[in-house]
Structure formats: C-alpha cells, structure tokens
Image (cartoon, rainbow, N blue to C red; front, side, top):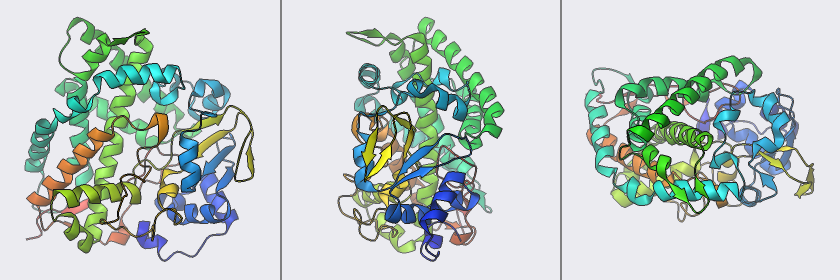
Length: 422
C-alpha cells in the first residue's frame, strides 16, 4: 500500500524504527514517508539522523518548529560555510551551480533576491497566462486517448518545462536536452553512488547556461534571462557566476517541483471522486483545492540543507554548531496540532493557503510561487475540462512513488491514466 491509503492503515512505528528509516532513506520510507514523519512528530520532533553520506543531520518535523526554523538566521543556507559536509554529500560539481539566492544568507541573499525580484515580477508572470494556456492546450491535443497514457512525460513535465523556458528565453530546440540533464539531477539522488552521473549532468548544464547567458549579452530578447543579464541595483549587477547559478535554480526548481506537483494533484483528485467534484465546481473551488493539495502532498518534501552557525536548542535538543539541519515540509504540513485530520485531503479546508509551508516561509519564501499557482490552475482546470471522465489506469493503492535515496522531490514515478474511458 502507498501514500494516504497506506498511512491510514499502517501500524504505528516506534521512534527507533522511524529514525532508522529516515536515516537510511529506505525504499519503504521513500514510497510512503507519512507514517515515519507521524512517529517522529510524536516522539522525536527534532531527530538526529545518521545518513549513509556520513554527515549527521537533524530533522525537524513539527509545524511550529519548522515555521520558526525556516526563518531562523542562525540556520544558514550558505553551504559554503559547511563546505566539508557539502563535499561529502554532493561532491564538487554542485558548488558552481549553488551561488544563488537559494543557497545564501543576508546581505548577499538580500542583494540577489532584490535583483531577481526586480525582473521576475508578478506582472511578468501574469503576462504569461495566455501563453501558458496555449502550451497546455497544445499538449492536451497531442495526448493519446485510445488507451492508457503515462501523464507525467506527456503532460505534467512538458508544461512547466516549456513555460519556464519561455520565461527565461531558452530556444525551443534546446529545451529537450536541458530537460534530460535536469531529470538526471532530480531523479538520481544525492548519494555517493550517484555522484558521477550528477557531475556529468551538472557540468553539462553549467556549460550550457554559461553559453546561453553569453548569447543573451550579444542577442538580448524579452525573456527573463536577458533581463537578469542587464539588471542592476545600487550594489551592481549579478556576477557571471551568480547569473549562471541563478539561471540554473530558476530552470531546475521552476519546472521540476511544479511537474511533480501537477502529477500529485491529478492522482489525488482521481483517487477521491468526491473531492474532485468539489474542486471542479468553479474557479474559486479549484484554487482552494490546489492550496490543500500543496499542503497534503507537496512535491518539495524537505527544505534544502541548512547548517547551524552556533549551538541551537530546539525542544530541548541541542543542535551543535556546524550540524546540518533539514526541515520536513511534508511532516509539518500534516501536523495534527496545526491541521485537523491532517491525513485527509479536504479541498474545502479553510485558511490553508495562509498556513501551509509548501513554498517555505520567511526570507527564502519561494519567489516562483505565483508562477507555480498559475500553472497548477491552468493545468488542472484544462485537463479536467477536456477529459471529464478521466480515470486512473490502476488501483490508487498500486501507485508507484519515487524511491531513489535522497531525492530532490516527492512525486510519482509514473501516472498511468485513461483520458477517455469511453
């Protein structure tokens, strides 16, 4: 059994079993992490882990702790400050791609976010609405209806990939290769055995983005990347290194997280016909349902690593200076102290948009949240309008979830559906 269907019926885990599963990132834990997070929230909400990469890590699973930790300046996002641990987990190849606002602290983070925010504006995102609809319609036109189809490669991934590439100004004939390199990074995981594949993929992406940024200097267009090339604030413009790294994080995070989120949403709505019916009542109902799905099954299971700049005590647990810290967004979003009946998906749940942590909290709140919401709204509304009788091709409990150790995302390995059962 997997997912909510499993979590409702699984026997409770002991704290020791839960900590071992989370430390080792077992296939069972990856397939269904919710019982593990439930056990840790109850008995070890700030839990020391001993992962295979050998760097002791502390995992935070309760909502209140997670919300505070996400904004705590004592927990640094600058992994250059924990470079030894960084090398042991990721190797050398990722460093050149992590010189961006996601992996920095103030004042550098403030400067980078200000420059990116001056170009990646809500107005620019809203201007994409018509184009997002056109891309969505074109993809749905091409989806085969004669039999079962895996919706992930046919729809869920191409949509946000094309949208973020349109936004950045990536030429259409270069998008497939960028997607393949990004897929290697997203699905390989971060363990030592995957390091070589990561090095190759990340090196190719770094070289490609550097060359693309150079092109935008001599052949500017209306895309976001061209705007970033020329954007400045009172402290100057992005360095070449920062520019390439920023392009990387916008490309990678800007489509992978949304792709898996669309898949999670389709799966859970098809698994719960009553919830789907409520969600499809009107635009407001769909928007509310999307926020509940962000809470219930976010594609970003854990925050990226932080490290303690000093000794920190959370819930009587000492996190020593230099230790790595992960914040479980999935665990926090199902905390019963914050959300009633958290393991139930309720698309009419009140006030969920203001409380879920799917986009983080504090200074590092996801700058791409408006675009992700726009893509989710367009994708789900158009998909169910075009194929109102769409159904899963198998039983919900047979769904296969990503089980690679230390994945970047929480999502399905495949999403077989029948678009037109007739």
